[in-house]
Length: 294
Image (cartoon, rainbow, N blue to C red):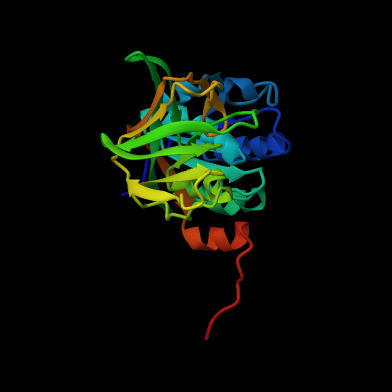
């Protein structure tokens, strides 16, 4: 059954280099197809006039049939945390560097965007993490993450000491610079830099990657995606470790606090052009060899 994309939202960051010409091309392409175009309000300064309206990201997520994010993976991460709750399908046009999530390049817009609008795409569902900081049994901070939640010592040169529990089962007490809790989506991001494994995006799993642990035997652990992960910041710590979601949203924990991480009920729906391959993206973005083995 061919999808009915009639109201298209365009989302991105106005300060991102190269966004304006891509937006102009998309507005023209969508307009020629008779589709309604809604621009995120912060992009209004780039396209002050035209056959489009302006709306907040929440309003776009609630009303649009499809959202096209223009920018890098950071732009899509920022938008995804809002759009996932509306389950609005998202298509990414890459104006950044790596582009694991925004996989259409600007020179492919005229071919690949119309194909997607005509129903030629693959659909992928990505889960997000819910992270909260609790203090004396009360929640004092809460945020979402598509890539990862990172508990670390911040700018301090000190390690933090914490206890890790999974599904109320004690795992270990650790002294380290921190801990990265990553989804499969985030396994090619910060987690990878910390020595974590690359996970296929369809896996229902979470990886926990210690950051410069004091115990050299400490290694990444992959757990079921439905696990509840608890990180207890021990009272003996002197620093207040930041808790960061997708490198964009920051909370601060104190000694004695607990960071609780679990899967969110809503998922992000990503659309990819036909022929998209996660392994091809890895070969391209991570500079893997393209040599064929006979």
